[in-house]
Image (tube, rainbow, N blue to C red; front, side):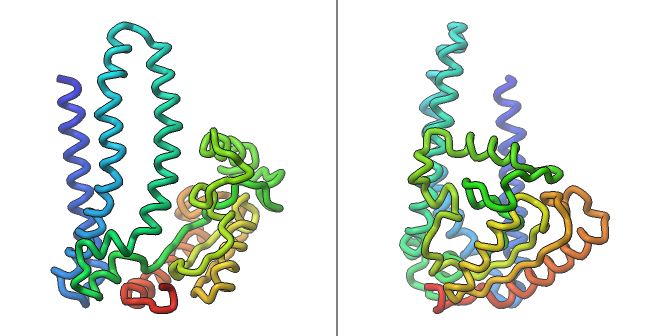
Length: 265
């Protein structure tokens, strides 16, 4: 009964989320035909479910194992299954992310190869990674940082668990994007960050690396050491200014980066 109730509640919420996402995607491109926008979003969802199937399959396959040991009150083995699952799923997430990015064009062409405009909408357009966590290595601003919300101690803790079991000398770029050497092919970008927070230096380097590859990229820097200050203190003038700028850039991106971008292919 409890399991059924949980499934009912969360599946309803999940379906509602998909519905609202469809409305939002449509609303973001009012000048295009309604059917085209919904079709593009549908293709993205089809491709996403290919990868979600891996995790769903693992979940379904491991459920009997967890249930057996839990019913036998073998809680130690339940914990071992959980630990192993976290490692397996984290590794799978990194590998599948790499495949998804590398095979975006191929996967999309399977569904919409007949329509060049629709295909372009399902690959890449614009990125807005706000105050992003990109580098697992210490930088001049993440080292010995005592900022509010996020600091050196929390950063080390997060990267330790994120990369647990990973060879840090050969860390995958999809786990720590700052380790990427060639940024060609990435979409245009915008971000903002506080000048006193741990991620300031790596954010600056990321934007500069994109620009060096000829990719349109811009960022705004605000005088604060609070990570995610726009969410922590949304009523303050600094947050209002950052939000207004974000909306301005987003509005521009909606009108200019949903078309084929030859320079980024």
